Each structure stands twice: as C-alpha cells, then as structure tokens.
Length: 285
Ligand code: AMP
Image 1: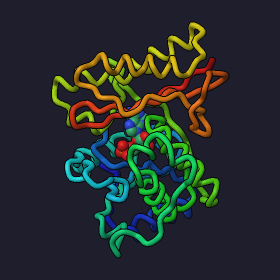
Image 2 (image 1 turned 60 degrees about the vertical axis):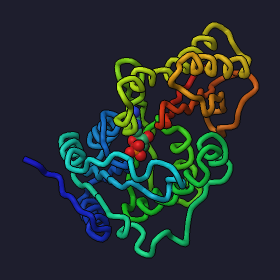
Image 3 (image 1 turned 120 degrees about the vertical axis):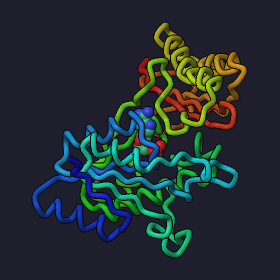
Image 4 (image 1 turned 180 degrees about the horizontal axis):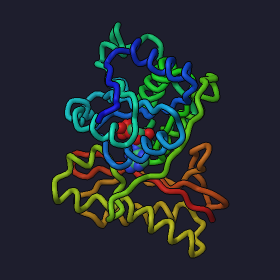
C-alpha cells in the first residue's frame, strides 16, 4: 500500500517536513525535474536509508532553461514518477505548478554563485546555474533543516549547491551521490528518453571519451591539452555527436588545469542530434 503523501502546495509541503522533524524524524530532500530513472532512484533510496522522512520534489524549473532550450519538450511522467518515488522509499512528493513556486512570475530575487557558475555549463548555458541555484534556494527555504541529495552526474551543479549552502548558511547537509549508468556506460538521464535508436547507440561516446582520458592518466599522461584532444578525438569519431566542451578541471574550483597533479575532474558536454548530454568522472594522478 502506498504511503506517499503527494502535494502541489508549498505550505502543505513545508508543514509535512516541520511535522516530521517535530516527531523526531530527520528529513532527506531529493530535488528533481521528474522523468525519474535509476539515477534519481539511487538518491531516493540513499536518503530513505539515512533519513526518517524522504521528500522528493518534481518541478521542471523554467528559470534554468534558456530561450530555445528544451523546456517545452522536457519529458514529464508524473504518474510513473510517483510510483517510483513511493517504491524507492519516499514519504512525501512535492509537485508544484509554476505558479506555486513563482506566484508573481519570474522572481525578482535570484541567486548567483559567482566564479563556480561561469565556466563549463555556465558558459554554454548562460543563466542556467542561476536558475538552478535560485530554485534550490527556494526549495531549501521551504524544506528547512535536512540532508539534500544531489548526483555527481551534474558535477558543476553539485559544486554550486555546496557553495550556496556554505555562503548563505542554509541548515542543509549536501550529500553528493555517484553517477548511475546504463550497462554500456551512458549516464542515466531524463534526456536519454528523447534519443532515437541511432542516437542512443551513439550516446555512450561521452563515457568512452572520459574513459580514454582516464586511461591516459593512469598510464602516466599529465598534459591536460593532450587529454582534452583525446576526448575531442573520441567524440569526433562518432558521426552523430557534436562536441560542446571537453575539459580537465580542478574538482573544487572547476578551473581548467594545465597538467594533472592529484585529483582532477574530466567533464564533457556533447550534442547527440538535438539532445545535449553531459557527463564527468574523477581521476587521481
Ligand atoms: P534532474 O531531474 O536531472 O534535475 O536531476 C535531479 C537529481 O538527480 C540531480 O541531483 C542529478 O544530479 C541527479 N541525477 C540525475 N541523473 C543521475 C544519474 N545518472 N546518477 C546519479 N544522479 C543523477
């Protein structure tokens, strides 16, 4: 029998979490844009194993989409999402309409984490990370003290959220969770649903590019430009793929590095047809 309480009202969501804490439960928060898959499921399961009450939010946040991006075509499967969230152990689902989150239209107050938001996704998608930071800050303000679970799949987003919490003193402990992949290495993503069969067959090239660079580092490669070239070459070997960026960055500052010393993060963004996919992995020299 389902124990999931579903609400599209911010006041009901806030009260459910306040009541849980009042009853002595810790709260876990899993913010999502829906079309839930095994990646989201792993976050919900982790939260449910560590927290007394897990709240999943499903909101396709228009602030984080630029003009001409895929806001209208972003997959929406709310009924299936609620089944998955329930089965994975969530106790509350918050599924607000746009007017509930932004009653006066686009908010006058936005949150920008400068520096961390400027390269990579920030360079390719101006305003995207401000949209993310703003909705996450709004959700944190509604949720109150909690542990919040985010995937490493969106590595820059995770870094931005950690910094947001530190700078604005939200009573939130951010938990980063490993990327869940398909058997062929493709990172699970809601956007994978929109790939044609040919595009789906091409999409593991992101993971392959990361693995090429990781293997080169393991065998002693230290020159970051050579690693970038390796990733670029692998992406251009796939006719359906078009590179946006392939970078080697410091895992904390996200600044590009010149050579590999200690931990680095390999990050790629690639167009496969009309879908833009991202992936990353950590490597230690
Ligand atoms: P989204 O619905 O794409 O906004 O993602 C919601 C949360 O799920 C974010 O914290 C993502 O980083 C995380 N997530 C998305 N895909 C994956 C994945 N393949 N593995 C782990 N976490 C993921």
